Image (tube, rainbow, N blue to C red):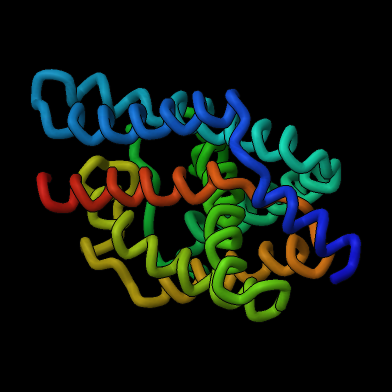
Length: 227
């Protein structure tokens, strides 16, 4: 195995640091308490409008933790490019309905530009890293296969996200119907931004990413059942 591959593998398999332990407990608490808070009518009006801030904190801490573990400065270059690409896709999608289908973001996510919440593109990036981490556990160091599996995983993940997002007014679909086109384009966009990570062998893997993915999935499954 080459030195480059070994470095990526070692970055993913090192034992957890104390900071990562604290971050994992924070993620578990944030998503578990968030799921509970969204089912309590008394606090729901407040909870719904803290989404932007909470996602910004979670994603920021995750990205910093990934960088500290792997020390690959190319992660930031990828993040800027992926963020701009996904934000542009969302902006065009909202304006034209030609990418995901016809939809608009609601006031629940309040920090917006061109009708798109700023934190949405950041969430795209972190979720893409998390699904790539999971995909690599099955595909190994096969970049095209890993990117392809990650794109399928993120589209499947969106199946759990969509009903909850609509009920909480994160966004709304024209006619109240979520089009198949939306899931297909989630996969396409995830594949496009996954490829640079895989082909350039950017070191990003972290055990915390899988915890984030599963904790957030738990959040959406609970709310799909409760709302």
